[in-house]
Length: 521
Image (cartoon, rainbow, N blue to C red):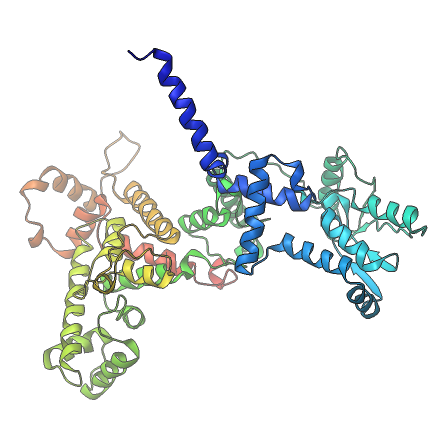
């Protein structure tokens, strides 16, 4: 019989065997672990002999990969340049003859490898460096506040040259209060040159420090402050800005997305500078166009999505024909009305395009009927995933454009791809905003009022109608109700109907305007 410990010994042997076969994969469970190791090896100029065997193997494999693919990263670029200068005196001579004076800005952010490269370039020649050791923010790239002292020591000890040092003490950027807080905060920083900056501006507003639980809480707090300043202080929205040090913060993800969500829900127009906002993304613009068509007839929306996803109706060819038909008929109508008229006659269209246009009009009618049947988030999901007669969906169309899909088959799969899981971040955020909008709508419009003594007056007609409908909903034939009653009495409390979608579209249109428009004032 097998001893109890034999199983454990076998497991240990198997684990040791696995370690021998694939040490790197087992050691580095996450890509960031390997990236950190590679960064440290170059920025800190560590030799491979200083690492554990498995770590050294990973570094060698990465260097070999760069050679085989003819690619280099930033650290390797510095190393190659430094090696070239060390091994080729002619290159160094030509370089120094061409650049007799060297100026380095933001010197505090240089790594040791970059500092070595600078010393090889100047070799005791004319060199000026500018920077502030209090602004050293690239420690993860090997920068440290001691850069200035190391440069000074190198010139004085190895080249016997005294450096001229000048400290600029006048600050023209920040108010006195901001400067005072920053100075107090930096006093505890080590390896810094003590300095006293003198403000040239007035004290300004006191500095506030807020502690927020997460990025959503942070966005709510800041947006609430913006609204308060706008309503109480009379400050235009176009005169306020949210400054982000970086757009992404590791596991927190995009910081601007949370602000965009909150600004949208609070109906504050904004302009995102330095990136593409949620409502400027092609996927979101296409979804908005379909929502507008679901409410009614919209020429711009129809031009945008008449062939999205592809349905044999290229916009540059079909739209001019529809416009021509509208003009020749002598009627002033929308493109959708003209397209419906063309569907009856098939004028100016080939048989395949005539058939495709009829199916597209039918799809739009079905989409319009869904507005009163399903919630806004479900409507967006339907627009995103519903397939046309060619077996294509908007989801498939954008998956193809993104060029990130993983194809599983050959030519047979090309016509009807199955990309059920593709959903970009902006689409998920857009759907989330739709759900928040519906929840807010139900809370605001969907309440059935009740008497509270003398605290309120008589109920409105809509409130009374909602009570009656709520009590007899199963016995009513909704198709016989007037549109107003259906919309305001039956659908509104449920967060359904055209007014819900229309208000959502109005908010989205607000975000496409300038933050300095008259409506902000």
